[in-house]
Image (tube, rainbow over all chains, first blue to last red; front, side):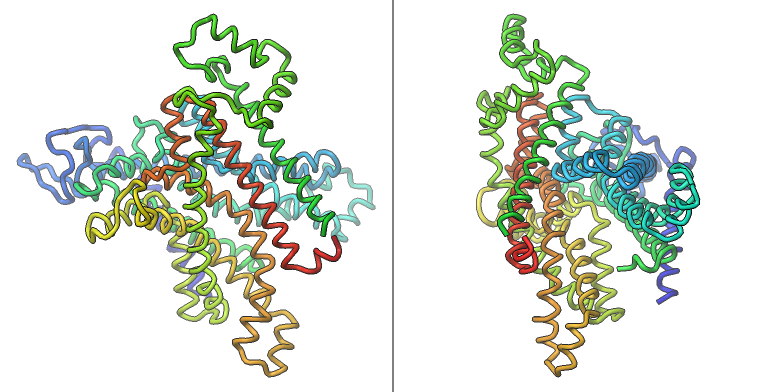
Length: 277
Length: 307
């Protein structure tokens, strides 16, 4: 059992590191430019070799762009969004959760009712509204994902704060005259990191899927940036003619997200065996 | 029981009020003049001025909100710019398709996840457990819309046994509902498994075993029933991910539901329809959760009695 957990953790980490390396080094290792069109060689199958000796290992898309190069570049946007959106969501959620748990009364009620309300709106629909109102760009997408993704953190952090507040060591500190800021920073904060880190690692994968879903709908990443969601959308209409256009970016995305989940699950078991399902 | 339901009802009203606030203020935060988002691009300055006055946009913001709410509770969510009819009607017409898709997917995912989760829990750390948990993890990592395209590739393009997209007969709902079920299945499997593991350690399960009851009765009657109670609540909360998933999957299969209408409303710049879709879907979610809470009270006598 322990070997299996360690295996999950290291296999997940290995795939994540590999994806990061490919994303960073894409301009050096990609055989073609991700936006280079060649309509005369569109929808070519994997391992297609042209007369001039040019080779397309994963084939080409409906505009004749090289799928391998686009898949490599696509990793950039997925990782960027996954990291930034989780960072934003986590920051908002932790702050509001601390506030709700520490300052009870009206503040707590307002924050928790806001959580209930946001839970009632599917984030896809909020994203649709935002794009209809504010237009579509990268920063806007990160904002949408961050502003809809904080609910889980707020709930968990509030719960932990509420239970820690009752702990004898916190009461002892308070009895000794520790001021609220000191109580918060010295005694409460250290207790919330483990659950927050666990939720955050697991959310990275969910955020990648959310981003690519919105991009697939045409309301996520703008089409000028190569992304896995847009590539899968490109292939949707050609699923009979050129299935590989959708297959490869989808495999890349699934593998990356799976690696993140493996890593997250392994990390959770490592950090806090009590949370194990 | 009555006071419990009344309390839940009040909570539902508060949530819906919150949704209306979010929707209302998002429109006011838009960089362009909100009135132009509610009117056709061909509207004359005269028409814009009239609408501005009629909708109260020349009055203070709280008056605007009150007017918005007054119209909303009467079912007036503005007129669709594209369909030239009330936006609410446009959404309500496509709502049954979304609910049908969601309902079938829900039933399907529970029907698969319940036995898989129970077996995983009973045979913990066996090959079946790893298989079930592993499949759930892979299912969670697979983007649903991509899974939909892959199912089209296998069942429509290669095997030619199911249609690719549209809605012209009962066979057209098979692939979309299987795809949507795959969104919920991993979550429910994990919930069932962990819920079952929890109750299997309870005293009443040990007592049942000690009485010499057959394992099937212990699991099926004593453990399962108690596990179902918390599961119902969590399932209710998962309904948003189901409805959200439906919005995306409708796009893959050209299924004529609310999601498809909302997404195409963006490209036709039909803001009233976009706004109506959020309000209707959220209302549906809140009502379904209310139903779940009532069901919960009915399932669990402790709530019925304590009220």
